[in-house]
Amino acid sequence: MTPSPTSPAPRPPHTLRTVLPVVALCWLAVFFDGMDVTIYGAVMPHMLDDSGLGLTPADAGTIGSWTTFGMLIGALTAGNLTDWLGRRLMLVASVSVFSVGSAVCALAGGIGPFGVGRFVSGLGLGGLMPLCLALVMEFAPPRRAALTTGLLMTSYHAGGMAATGLGLTLAPAAGWRWVFWAGVLPAVVAVPLLLALLPESPGVLLARGEREQADAVADRYGLPRPTAVAAPAAGAKGRLAAVRALFRPDSRWATPLLWLASFCGLLLVYGVSTWLPQMMRASGYGLNSSVSFLLVINAGGIVGLLIAGRTADRFGAVRVSAIWFVLTAAGALLLKAHLPLGATYAVVAVTGVWLFSAQVMVYAATDTVYRGSERAAGLGWVTGVGRTGAVVGPWLIGALADSGNESWGFTTFALAGLVGAVAIALVPLARRIGRSGAPATVALAAGASPSKG
Image 1 (cartoon, rainbow, N blue to C red):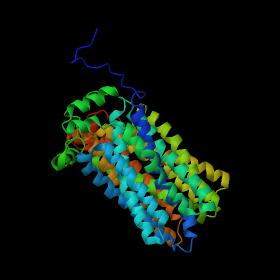
Image 2: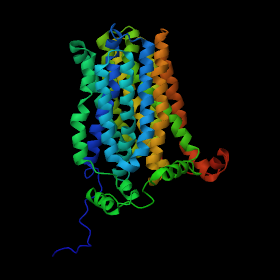
Image 3: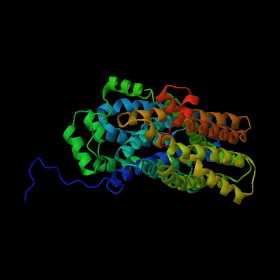
Image 4: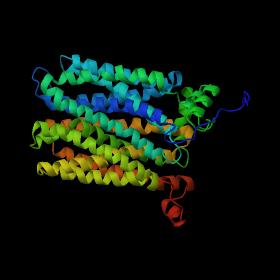
């Protein structure tokens, strides 16, 4: 019997398997993001030894901050352009831009042009992460948001490991510039795949008035059809309304706490990604060992994300993030001591397990604070404000290195971990206070049950 034209086509179940193509494409994009971010730290010791370039530790820290400042601008710009281009094309544009920036770095004859290249890379990198996170969380099955987010972010560390491998093999043999030429690969590999295979967000399609296309994408991947409540509002007024919604009564105190936790988390992520090899080299380890620590900490990051995603789905992203931040602080303090090489590798690996996934669980925690229509704006602002930590981290450690105080960098990382733990741990209490409008003591005395996370 032929189905009537109005009958909906059979829908696949909404499981991780049905949305795996979307997760895989975003995984590839974030893989190249992690590779591009980590390339700089992986080749920095070689660049500092290149007298023709004239790079000093202070310059290196400043250029690292230019990258993350570009990311901040890129994240804010991507939100505006998404209204016209959609998430799919903005993701393609982001990959293309940071590939161009890598080519500029490879061609740079001095620190000025090199800094411009890193800034351009940052513009592309800044928009990519929130776009991928928003897409994956929109497509993720119910009660699997944290696991899917953790799975996505393993790609960042796989990319970091690839960059470190290039730094260990290609840089000594052919020079640091060839490592940046490898950073042009995303434009060749990822862009055609994203254009051909990545679907647009059903919520964005609905917000643009494309109801049939939105329903078609949702049906193809087994998603619930989007409603006006779940769709992000378009235009400048829509974005302003989305930002105001982040400060509605039950999230007005949780929002700045998420921002602070993200600031601390990204200070750790980008401070470590940029400076760990040079900090370990200054602590007395050899050049190859110092760069290898970056490989090891990213390997730990992959393991940590797989553990954190499953653990957060069971116990809540907020709890996991807070504990992981505390363990990161402990690992940073242990690295301050000059341990035997084998013990140091073990500490670096275990610290990687906690450090990167602490920040990713901050992203996952936004799903417990914001409604569907606010998710993209909430993620964008948590990521964007957190980028200020990514700007401060490389600059601050660079200033410490220039004064010969690299060891204080580990103390800085430990303090960031403790502050991040306190901030994210207070999010459930802040939501209860916002809902009740009462002081904390009254809310607790009333026996308000904690929110998820």
